[in-house]
Amino acid sequence: SEYSQEPPRHPRLRINAKEPFNAEPLRSDLISSYVTPVDFFYKRNHGPIPIVDDIERYCVSMTGLIDNPKQLFMKDIWNLPKYNVTATLQCAGNRRTAMSNTKTVKGVGWDVAALGNAVWGGAKLADVLELVGIPKLTSATPSGGKHVEFVSIDKCKEENGGPYKASIPLSQATNPDADVLLAYEMNGKTLNRDHGYPLRVVVPGIIGARSVKWLDSIGIITEECQGFFMQKDYKMFPPSVNWDNIDWSTRKPQMDFPVQSAICSLEDVNVVKNGKVTIKGYAVSGGGRGIERVDISVDGGKTWVEASRYQKAGIPYIAGDISSSDKWAWVFFEAHTDVPKDAEIVAKAVDIAANVQPESVETIWNLRGILNTSWHRVHVRVGH
Ligand code: MTE
Ligand code: MO
Image (cartoon, helix red, strand yellow):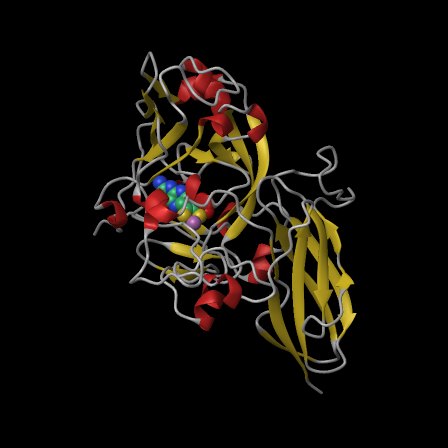
């Protein structure tokens, strides 16, 4: 079958769909390190994993509204200055299963681990675009180019067997501070097949769907990409919209993700012996907004305490301070409490723009089940 040449994967992944392969780590594996090991980084695919076996001949076609269309080979990309950017990639479908539990949604189910934090190594897209004559900080080219489209070599059924694609605004692509990468390394090693070998886009701060893997071409275009995943998917609709009244054209493709957090040291339901629990998890917000605070409740949200936050051991995390924190990366939080009786433990994060996670999933329910950022709740039963 077309799935007979999939790469090997870690046996401890939780598989949500086999073909295409979609899997996430266990909660406990997710929070065992600030930089997620490649093996435990969630894998989100819409088709079979492509095979690129001739790296000498592999190239990215630069097309569209540019004066000199060009083919860039890996050596051209390797020749550009290399940047390492620590960035958390999060699928818009993270926590979809919990949203589905209130009312059915369409899409692959995910627990709370459809995200990961990696050190991505590669060239800045802003530098790559300069090679085809587009200067830094351009929002429109003289020829009317306003968006940058990334087209993959994979084949997806949603595109009727065509490639996965997405676009971002040219202003973001040409802004060196936006840290958009064409990445060929993940955590210091050559990118592996599951994550986009030999070259993928990494767009920090926005939903994972725009970070196109297995890049085939980059196009400068007038309007945003018209592909399925931009126009007929990954849009946020209000709870009133259903499959009978949906009008996809009324909404923009989702880009930034909202503030999110989840407890990963506990499962949905836990039995503990003496009532002492460690509450540990991650918090992250889109757009490079740091995490200001994580509040923890052990009484279902009536009263709260603040958790401690950290990225790297020994370095205090200061939200919004790029000299002490990784701007595009999650923070871990931790709190230790005594839970004398059965309890509902809740986490909610606040970002530096004072955005707060919504209390209930019902208020943000949407038919595609994206962006479930409601307060994360787990239950503890004290046994004797
Ligand atoms: N790129 C291609 N070519 N094909 C895909 O199916 N999935 C997207 C994005 N890029 C996808 C893709 C989605 S929805 C997400 S969340 C991320 O890749 C997942 O990246 P990962 O598998 O490296 O975690
Ligand atoms: Mo995704």
